[in-house]
Length: 289
Image: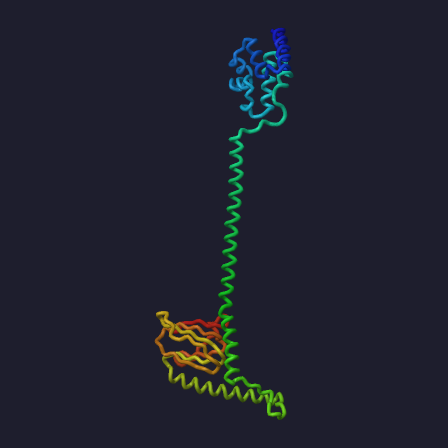
């Protein structure tokens, strides 16, 4: 049998060089010449019949890689007594067999889905960051809103005072006489303050007696006031100039907002009301019951 197989090898090798035979055809003819069935050969090599059929049919796509395919072919050659070198020379050699197209498609889809997932996380994170920044900015704007209103009212008060002639410069004498000394200016200011406080106290005293059941507001400098009743209806919304006062006699409860709390005097039922403890950024908000 060995002499017969050796003669077959030489015949197959010469036919290979002439381009008429493949590795699968050589193995099939060698097996048939030895009188073995595929099932018998598969049992002796402990492989599946399908693998041997694929090997004899030159269908290399069923093998996981080139190394396994060539090793199986070499084992078949040893079992059949065929020269393995001439058979292996006809088989693919080198890099690992390429995966089928459907498996490549699966991996490609998984990679694409993974990239989409990270992109989605990036978009959600960016939106959340943008919302946080906008919320922070809006809160800062709200905190400084009333402070800005107070500053605007302050300058409006200065302009109204200048326009009405209340703005005075005591340090200069435009008649050409000698300038007042620092001590004289100080004494004049003290006297003016004393007179102003006296007038304010007299007005407040009169208002106390008159509005024991209501509220009384007086601005020592420009200020603004808003008062709402329990239904939320605005019953007073006004800017007071320096020295101006106003009374509110509506029934309690009342909801009050006072701008420039440090420059506004408030009396409730004839008693002074502490605005500073209810103020933020110099704007007081409180409820009177």
